[in-house]
Length: 255
Image (cartoon, rainbow, N blue to C red; front, top):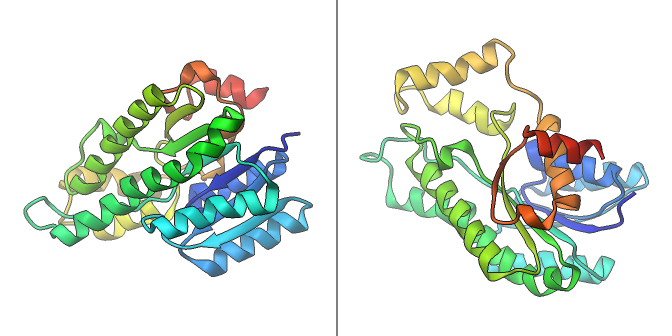
């Protein structure tokens, strides 16, 4: 059983909540973060009821003070930090480039890029001390553009490059961007709900079809891979953009 200390952002639902539950079941001690306090505290209660250890820090990762508080909570409660999972993210605005506002773009980049940068910076001294890991949740949209997703595609591409530079600059840690695939989360619901008329018609129909045909796996499926990477990703993978279902990841999950 692991006794590592792991921060997971965006942990109130979806992939973040699934990964947090799995990590707790593997013995990790958790600091979980999200903007929504109610679901976050419910998850803490659930983890503790199962004899796990977790503490919640509510707030927006684009706020430097929140990032510092998240890291400090790990140190105050557990005395160390082994891994950071940058999972908090938003897809909005779903809109053509000609229609999306600058404010909406700025908000997307603040959450999807600046937040991981700020939190990683706050965590780095403590991760260096533990030869720890930073796992940042990216997307296939980083390398495969989608109409109406300009801000999200740009943000995830930037996150991948941030990760690559982090790996170059910080040889003591392992830095990975994670591609979770198409998963049954609130983000997918937003795509179905808001994408009509904003995305190319065939692309929107494809995402609706995934849901209607039952082809969206639950977040626990890639969540197991995310948890395994957070605890055990080998140093030689640092700097890479890794799919959840690669054979080497499956082998790591099975160990």
